[in-house]
Image (cartoon, rainbow, N blue to C red; front, side, top):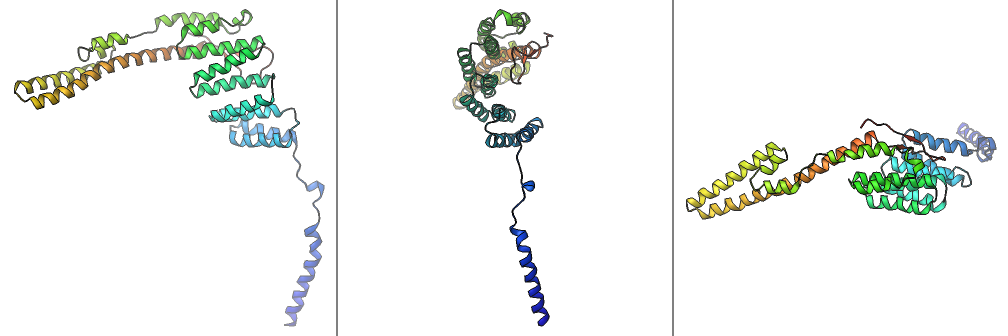
Length: 312
C-alpha cells in the first residue's frame, strides 16, 4: 500500500516537471511559413501533371495568401485553364469572366476572351462563341488581336459549312497578317468545296415513289432492297385480302403498308441530308487537319506564334 502511494506521488512529481514543456511557445524556426514562389510552383506542378482539381485549390491558395503578387493574374488564368482542361466549360467561362472583371487590357485578358469563345464552342454554342469574338474586335484596337479573332470567326463559320461568311471574315484579316495565316493556301483548299459529293434530298424523295429507289440513289443498296421487299409485300398482301373480300385484313395491311411507304420516302430524304452533312464534315476535318493554323494557347506576346502543315 505504501509503495503504491509513493509511486503515485512520483508520477505526479514528474507530470508537474513536464508542464512547462507542454505549454512552451513554439519557436520561430518551427513555424510553417508560406513562400510565394514555392506556392506558385506547387500549383504549376499540379497543372503540368494534369491534376487540375488540385491545381485549382493551390492557385486559389496562392491568390488568398499573396494578393499583391504580380502573378495573381496568371493564377486566375490558370484556374480557368484548369477548368477548361478538365472539361468543366461553364466553370471555365465563369473563371475567365472573373479575370476580365479585375484585369483589363492585358495579354491574359485578351487571351481570356479567346478562351471564353473556345469554351462556348466546346458547349456547341456557336452563337455565343461568335458574339464573344465580335465583342473583342469592337473592344480592342490592336490589329493582331483583331486578325486572330477574324481568323477564329472564319473557322467557326467553316465548321457549320457557312462558306460565304467564312470567306468574308478571312478576307477581313489585315494584309500584313494574311501571309502569316496562310490564307492563300486556305483559299486554294476551300476552292475544292465544289467537289464535295452531294445528294439531292428532293430527288431522293421523288425517286422513293418507287419503294427503295431513293435509297438506291443514295447507294444504300441493302436498305433499298429491304424497302422494296417490305412495301411490295404489304401491297401484295393488301391486294390479295381485298380480292378475297377480306376488307378488314386488307385495311390493316394497307394502313401498315402506308406507314412503311411514308417511312421509305422520309428516310430517303433525311438520309440524303445526312449524307451531305457527313461529306461536309469530312471535308472540314481535312481542312482542320492539314491547313488550319495552330495559334499558341500560351500567354500572348507581341506578334503571333503560328505553326501549320499543309498536305491537302
